[in-house]
Image (cartoon, rainbow, N blue to C red; front, side, top):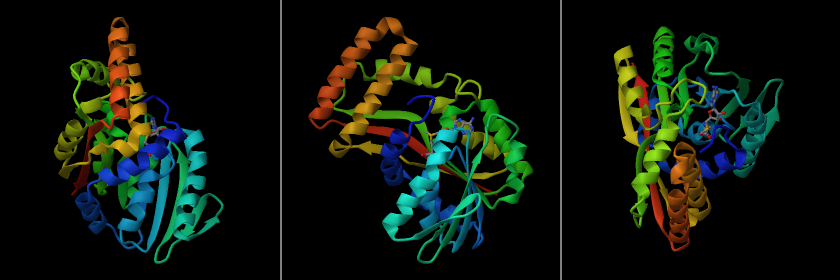
Length: 287
Ligand SMILES: C[S@@+](CC[C@H](N)C(=O)[O-])C[C@H]1O[C@@H](n2cnc3c(N)ncnc32)[C@H](O)[C@@H]1O
């Protein structure tokens, strides 16, 4: 929604993401892992991917490296992981550079690592990990960067790669408004701006990623992982509409009044129980 990802927004989206993720791909990823894997999560934010995947991997010992360039988010990660562990009644110990979570039948270690993914990817040492994950990252990146990531994964021996929740450009507002397409065309054009990785693929990222990984030598499976915003998600839905309107107006300032009128109609519709589907794709790449 913006170029920096606020903690509040990541918290709001976490349950929608959890409900959307494709379970079959999670299970297939899990089957490729050893019993004590080292996993790296790219663009980890506060660790939402770990919180979703760790209990579903059936691996009794897991070591995660959470990679992000945003120090403000990384410093929040231990607190978010601790709250999550507390909810389950698990024990958390702070170690020198990591957090250790002792769950019922699983020991997790999470290390937070500041790393700018627009720099040289060899520093991630992907050859030493058992699996690579990312969530809600790849619509920010360019075709060129996806090519570099695919080459680095191949050079590192093709670790299993689970890339989840990539926006794919499908949206369905219910009830529909005559200006939905007008606004979303401008929003998607705005998504294609540069987020530090070169011109973003935005809604084309999911397809580009699958094609590039196949050419690099991976077997690729994709599955929809769509958000379904219903009446209980009114706050998130309103924030989405605000974000769509802001980005569309930045793209086409002359259309500002038309876009604001659309947003006002959508806000009224949300109050009356309107729903929204936002299309995402999950992808699993294995050798
Ligand atoms: C939409 S958020 C998703 C966060 C997390 N994966 C989740 O699902 O909650 C995108 C994340 O990518 C990170 N990011 C963006 N550009 C980055 C870069 N150049 N290097 C590393 N992380 C980056 C952001 O800081 C943010 O945490």
